[in-house]
Image (tube, rainbow, N blue to C red; front, side, top):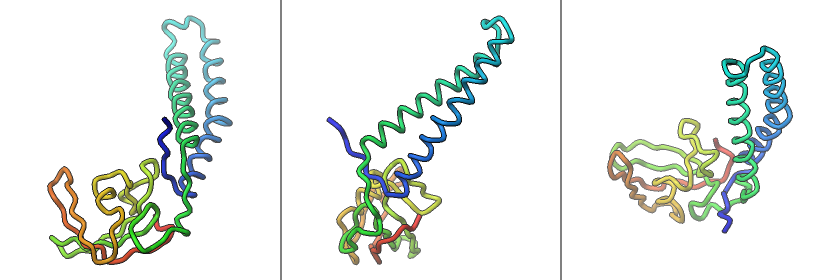
Length: 161
């Protein structure tokens, strides 16, 4: 069973660029570093060689991870989503009912969410609790810090984050 990964057009492009950089630049650089380290002799006590091999393993693991995520990506154009309800890609203005402060988030996939940049994952507790809500609806979510209550003030399309 293949679980689809929701991803914005921009998030998909970013992952493809990272994959390209890893396969065309970093992979080749680490192979050269391994060759240079081999020339230094005894591999058992060659710290440069072991560091380069470890780096190679991390690069290859990330390449496999990116290929997997891109292969399962369900790319969604955030500028084309409906604003009637909170869905993937929408920008949501929430009113924190405890503090009367407004916060704005864009709902994105787990690979591209970054709270400091204003985006949260649709799979996060608050993201899941916002899905399908309409303007004026109350959102109650359980977080590690306790239960939080919000009101959906506005839902809009856009490439916010």
